[in-house]
Image (cartoon, rainbow, N blue to C red; front, side):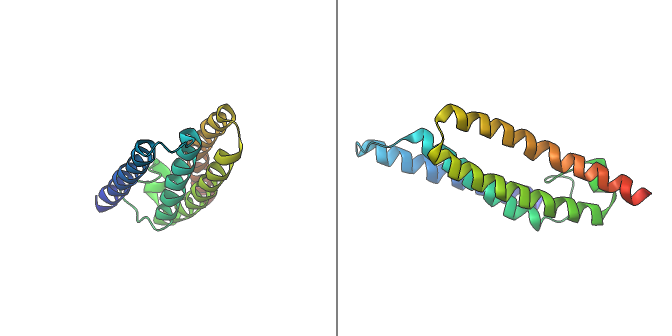
Length: 134
């Protein structure tokens, strides 16, 4: 349960800091492109969660909680190492591309990344489990 609260705390801090920065810049009448910085902020959050996933211990509250990862500590560890790298790289790609792509392309990239971040660890855990079962 501690992992859940640590992730939740980090997301709350991220939202508070990011919202405060945007409000401060708008109050100073600075011209900013909020939509670009939202992609950078979301990418940063995803990358940070990816780093956190790599060291996550087996639990029933957070992480890739499939029947296959919960059945084996070895599979849990391998899946979370893969998912951590995937989330880290996806976060970096979202940060960088958010600055250079048009907004609509960034939205489609984000939707594709969200589907991949959800599906790939699930598929990997399934394949690992049945590979170890022989």
